[in-house]
Image (cartoon, rainbow, N blue to C red; front, side, top):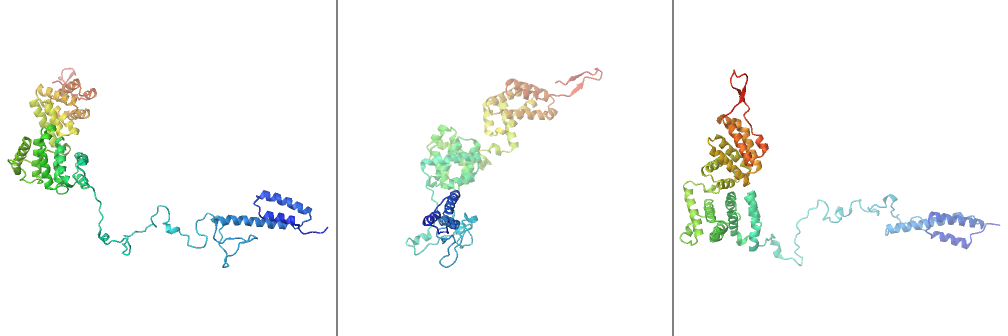
Amino acid sequence: MGLGLPSDNNRGNADDLSDSFLSGEEENGIITKNIKNEINGNWISAPNSIHEARLKAKAKRRLRKTSSRDSGRGDSFSENGDPSRGTNGTAPPTSPKSKLLDRKSRAGKGRGLPKKGGAGGKGVWGPPGEVYDLEEVDVKDPNYDEAQENCVYETVVPPLEEGAFEKTLTPIVQEYFEHGDTNEVAELLGELNLGSMSSGVPMLAVSLALEAKASHRELTSRLLTDLCGRVLSRSDVESSFDKLLRELPDLVLDTPGAPQLVGQFIARAVKDQILSRSYLDGYKGRVDCVHARAALDRAAVLLKMGLGGLRIDNLWGTGGGQRPVTQLVREMTLLLKEYLLSGDNKEAERCLRELEVPHFHHEFVYEAIVMVLESKGEKTFKMVLQLLKFLWVSSIITVDQMRRGYERVYMDIAEINIDVPRAYFILEQFVDKSFSAGFICEKLRDLCPSRGRKRFVSEGDGGRFKLESY
């Protein structure tokens, strides 16, 4: 039997293979079956036709994959799997497998630079280093207005309401009493739109200082001096003191000494030249209130004394932390001497509080014990012991300050003993009484030094010795 051409059925099978999307194993199985059938049917050229069908199927699958990724780029394949040419005869660009995820252009355009010069990302306002100039106004713009060219835009702060005035300024003044920086207060007040309520600033500051310490009143006087000319005017200060004089009957209810304190504020303001000297003359014969008259009389007396040499600029004194140590030691010594003359524990407590040096109370304990060692009678011994116990119970002198005062005496007892021969003996008795009174601990009592020097009675006493006694 001779070799025959492939029948229509076999040719149909070959066409079906070209459109199939079977896996490699399925294709191998079908091809093997067809080869066997065609060999039995004496089709010798079957292997070549099957090979062409497989090439066509691969080409179509590849075309469908690349068309979805490179659509519109002119990539196409002919029926035999060869890439087709473009209309101009040039071969379309192809991308190797290593650049499938490359975001650069594969059309042969550009130099591989980032899109929009690096200014196309999310949240980017422009390329790096770009400086934006002021936008010029377009005269041809239908919304153009000639008045806009000379406009000056400023931040407008709404005026402070009367109800929020005291609530806003009270924390500022109270914080100033802690840090004492007048420049910070001036900056904070400059940020507020006080308007016509600027005259209330001195009145609020003085009202808060009346209930505070003497050092706070000194700070208030400095604050008014520094604010005048920057935030306040002299007319604001005058109107503020006028209101204080009118409200003195109400201020006396909370601060009984308000008339004298307000008078001192007025005298200090005149001395600092934020009030005119004719301010007091304007009230002569026109004051009906008893408290206002007392305040003005106090101010007039202080100003007359200032002409005689009184330092009105140091009227309130200096805060404890700002005083020199020698001055504090001198004032504590005077305080103890006055106490020994009067015997008033409460007055001594008040004077010690007014010094405002709780960190320096150990000096007071030291000076009190040294005064006991240098005294000759028992009166000083008992009064100082009573005073230290009173200050301990009232918590004016803390545990640490009391301990440091006693330890300082222990360290200096050798030098004190040079001038006071009985210093060791008196100190031991005072420490024992202090421990019995309960304001020093047992450990501090045991640290009390005793005179350890021994001496022989005589050369013929057989080496006997005795402790030195007084």
